[in-house]
Image (cartoon, rainbow, N blue to C red; front, side, top):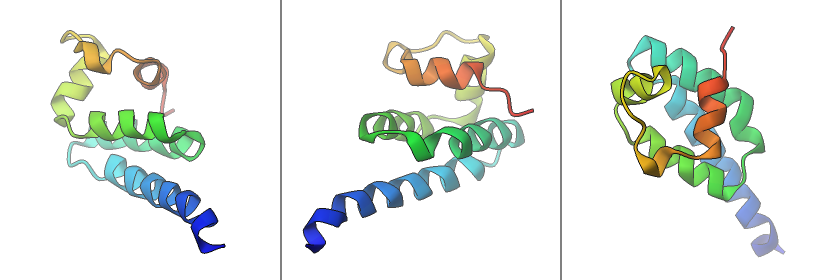
Length: 92
């Protein structure tokens, strides 16, 4: 019985961790943008989107911010529907 609920518990732990990581980046603009996006979207993400978001959060705040603004080209590995949603997200 415990084994049946364990995968769901693990995904919830991942979600909580990602929301925390997205909120406390150290670059205020990234905290606001990534943190707000995470709070709004991470709870509904499936495992594949969580993995994509985790990979994105491994990048530097300045790179992510520049990719969102369009001042630097977006690397192919991040050209995903998830990034498109992030780019359209408005924290206001």
